[in-house]
Amino acid sequence: MMQVPPHLCGAHRRRQAGGSLRGAWIAVAAICGGLLATGCDQIDAQLPEYHKGYQPVQPIAYSHRLHAGDLGIECKYCHFGAEQGKHAGVPPVNVCMNCHKLVKPDSPEIKKIHEAYKSGASIEWVRIHKLPDYVSFDHSRHVNRGVACQTCHGPIQEMEVVKQQNTLAMGWCVNCHREYTDNPPAHLAHKKINASLDCSGCHH
Ligand code: HEC
Ligand code: HEC
Ligand code: HEC
Ligand code: HEC
Ligand code: HEC
Image 1 (cartoon, helix red, strand yellow):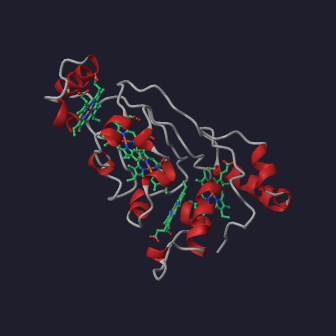
Image 2 (tube, helix red, strand yellow; image 1 turned 90 degrees about the horizontal axis):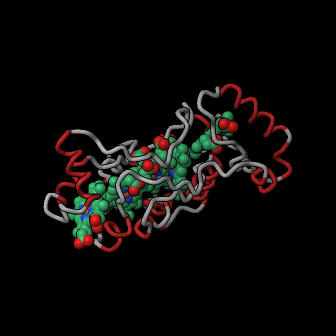
């Protein structure tokens, strides 16, 4: 089975919509054939930073610092998909209404929640983290093995507005998979860890 060679660390551009994976395979062949010897730092330096640092303005001034930090609401209270499957998901309006039916109903920001709830519309949150379609990623595989949200997303509970903390580049994924395979943390030391280094683990 084909595996990621040890030197290949994220030497790929974030995909533009509509690009073909076949073309990209040729790019990888070229990278494997020639550039690897130069080392990853030099390759990465020539590439854009994917969406790292992306911090769009959201339709409601929702704050993780307030809710997940000060109020201490658990991540999974709102992102309840994270233990169950591929997507952590963004909570539907009724989750907000559990509290905001009563909490600050007269605030202009909370009125937006009430309006969405009454009309049955969903709030148009702007998506921040997004992998290309040809990559398989599953939250539950990671979360149920004890990989903390913050390992991948940074200190969300301190963020007023969410910002993408990591590149989500192939090299970022692979480096962690290699780390867990070579030096598993104590709680996984005697378990079989299935953190793929095979191309087909993440691309199928
Ligand atoms: C009260 C509900 C609530 C809680 C608790 C909460 N979140 Fe969120 N989360 C949201 C909402 C709403 C959004 C979409 C708006 C935004 O990006 O701020 C979101 C967005 C996110 C995103 C970005 C999603 C994207 O588009 O890529 C991440 C990552 C995230 N949350 C992680 C966390 C983590 C980690 C915690 C715990 C430390 C947490 N959240 C706690 C409601 C919540
Ligand atoms: C577990 C209860 C709880 C949940 C669930 C919850 N909130 Fe809150 N929210 C609060 C509390 C408490 C405050 C602070 C109120 C205050 O300032 O006294 C607050 C404040 C806010 C504010 C600031 C309002 C202002 O004018 O100061 C916004 C905006 C907000 N929440 C949006 C949301 C959204 C969007 C969701 C759903 C994704 C949500 N909240 C879910 C409890 C909650
Ligand atoms: C191993 C890294 C990793 C861990 C751990 C992780 N995430 Fe993510 N998260 C990602 C990646 C990668 C994406 C983009 C997924 C995609 O586009 O399919 C993402 C996307 C999201 C999104 C956007 C919507 C979605 O579900 O695709 C939210 C919200 C989110 N994560 C919240 C969380 C929360 C909450 C936790 C902890 C319970 C968590 N994540 C743990 C890597 C991680
Ligand atoms: C912080 C470390 C970490 C990061 C970052 C990470 N992973 Fe993982 N991943 C793991 C661990 C640990 C496992 C093993 C889970 C198990 O053994 O059940 C795993 C398992 C997987 C699996 C399941 C393997 C299989 O063969 O079914 C896939 C697929 C996967 N990761 C994809 C990704 C992708 C894609 C990214 C980047 C977007 C990523 N991971 C980033 C730690 C990480
Ligand atoms: C742990 C998960 C993981 C493994 C293993 C993995 N990839 Fe990837 N791959 C990704 C992610 C995430 C992206 C999208 C981000 C990027 O372009 O770096 C990606 C992107 C790509 C791209 C597109 C690059 C571009 O320029 O758009 C190609 C081609 C590719 N991978 C080939 C491979 C090959 C060949 C292997 C085996 C040697 C492999 N991948 C193993 C996660 C993985």
